[in-house]
Length: 267
Image (cartoon, helix red, strand yellow):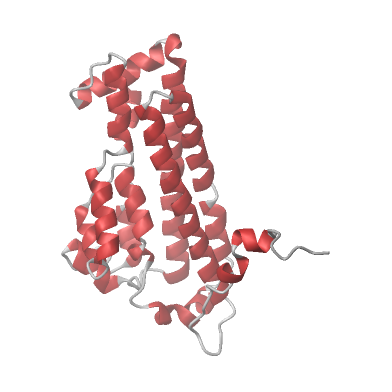
């Protein structure tokens, strides 16, 4: 006899709820709008997981569990490496198919992903202007401001290095500490941590590049759907306020851990 209380795959994953969350706005429905929604919902699920890992990394480093932190940085990198294939799904659209429903998105935009902003804040990119985007949602504003009050990942690493006896008062001393770690084979745990961090940073930068090219492929130099929202947040007419692709172009030089990159020059 079947036990109705027995856990099922669908019940565990909440599939009934999950599969009801895709609500295309086009009428009659544009074929490609469903995949567009699913891809972006998938990104948000991955961002949730990444924030979960970021908090775990912070806890591991606070208690000197370096190899556990390194392992989770490798997990962050593995997640980011799912992003470009997801963008490739979007790229199976042709521009005319995207334009058939694109105007229905306004003023919504990926610019408004609060989890993406929180992830950037956690990783050290702390532009408080982005908080203004969410001023109509006090819960999100509180969440972002709470993240801004917490130390970023690099700050947590630096605190760990100080406990290990490294001089880290200035950025110059931090670079010197990284060089010393790489030159000392006994520091294999810290060297592995640094390698995992820079690999994650590198793959995130590659994702930014691919995102830019995907957007340019789809819309050329048209303004982003979140044009007015972005212009308000940044306090200017551009870059996002005039051209979505120009805003993405402006993000390509962003790095989470610039000291790790700079230290390469000094090795």
